[in-house]
Length: 283
Image (cartoon, rainbow, N blue to C red):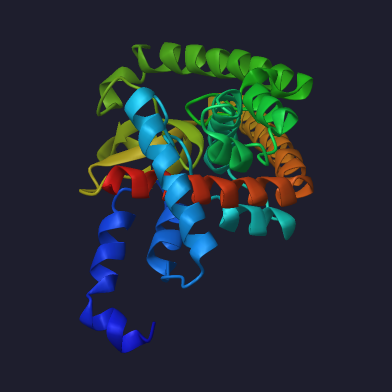
């Protein structure tokens, strides 16, 4: 069918309406790229797939593509040995979880929905990728203490060092010799250091390092000399923690890169299924 005929039929508007029923961008791409076929067997197969999806949606409403992301750009980055962020790795895990669920659900229904089951059977569960990312990253996209022994130890040491530092600062701000010079009796952070807010006119009364000032200039944020070493200890532990987190994320990214061929194939299968179910929903 030539392009002019498709324009006259407003074929693009039909595709756009079908695409609205897709759950993620992979399915949308297939929907918007669909062209009519003059091969009878191909058309019959497409219709049979849509018919199966239509019947399955009518019987089983929990078929869902929720949590699926088009993670192909993330796979490209991982294969170039870039470090993926925790949330990006979590998106990959959630996508694999959904693909595994669809694989299990549809293959169990092979006797009634053979075409959908045949497509889903090609999904690679990638269970070890799911498990390792889940072991290291929680649902909030945070690297957990148990991701490594080193990280657990560093965070424990960091909490102790922070508690000691804050205890010292608490004694300072509530001491009678400094309290009159403070804007507020509180501890805050500036440039990664724990500081106290001192009225600018009294800066000479508090021995310490100025790290910042308020917008009005009325308050200076000073690190008392008494806690410089404790601040240094906290900062060193924070940097070690950051390095360990980056090491863990790098290892997970390398794992994803090693399995990218299977994850990428899963995305293609999910896109195909998403498109088929979108046609059924439109029908």
